[in-house]
Image 1 (cartoon, rainbow, N blue to C red):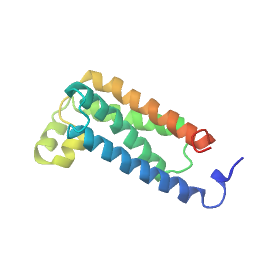
Image 2: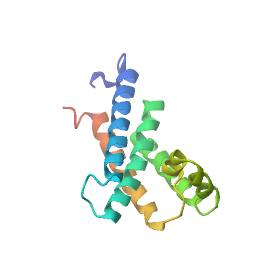
Image 3: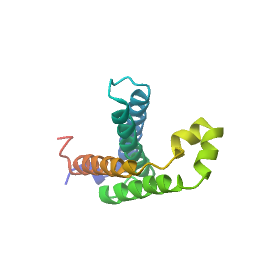
Length: 138
């Protein structure tokens, strides 16, 4: 076994998770700004997937030794919970008052978003698992 789980591992994992979160936010904002040249629907759904990826990285930041499957499942469940909350008027009301609330909660339910959240969870799970077992870092 490598030193991934040795002394200082939690700090290294947290630093990597923080960097991943920052890159995810940068990618999402770039997509939201239309910097990618993707068609509108592709931009929206890429943003949905990245939302779940961001949640995954934040979970790893909070709990560095979390299993990739667990982090992905929690991130997906949270994404789906937010989406299903959009069936109520609460997120729309909060989103009307706050840009931050609009970015975090959205405003209207869209069933295809549920699939794209799963895509993001799968991507985060696979990346996290590969990093954890050393497949990406060497």
